[in-house]
Image (cartoon, rainbow, N blue to C red):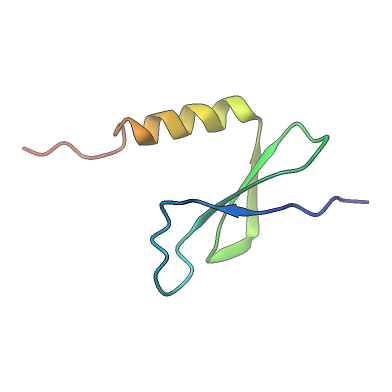
Length: 69
């Protein structure tokens, strides 16, 4: 039987109206992290922790932020 995931929302999700949150879940005993967007909760991405950690580091370092002229 599949274990229910305990979804946690990002603290950077704005908290305003609508579903604009990134959510993360970890299932005990499973070697994967699960990601979903609140607007489409049925669409879930699963990955091992290392690539997710690299993604978070890249985002927080500003790697995906366009440079200003």
